[in-house]
Image (cartoon, rainbow, N blue to C red; front, side):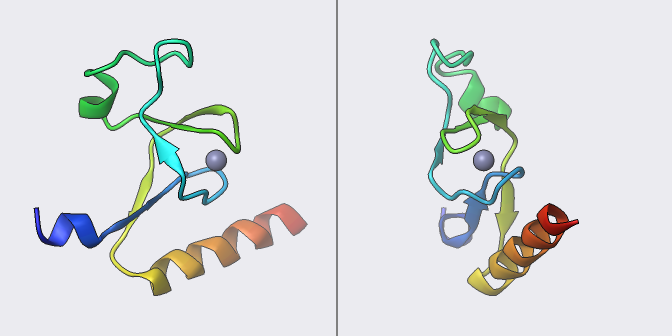
Length: 72
Ligand SMILES: [Zn+2]
């Protein structure tokens, strides 16, 4: 509560913010995946362990680094 709700969580693969615990069809176990911290990213189409950011600034930095990696 409090501090945690302000944190930004994003897909570790692509930085997508719209991630959610996977459904049974997506390979998740409802009630367990949430606890294990496993999320499903629709953009990647795979399961991901999200990265947490304390601020939007940190998140933007992460996005930049993803882009850099893709350009290489
Ligand atoms: Zn993703």
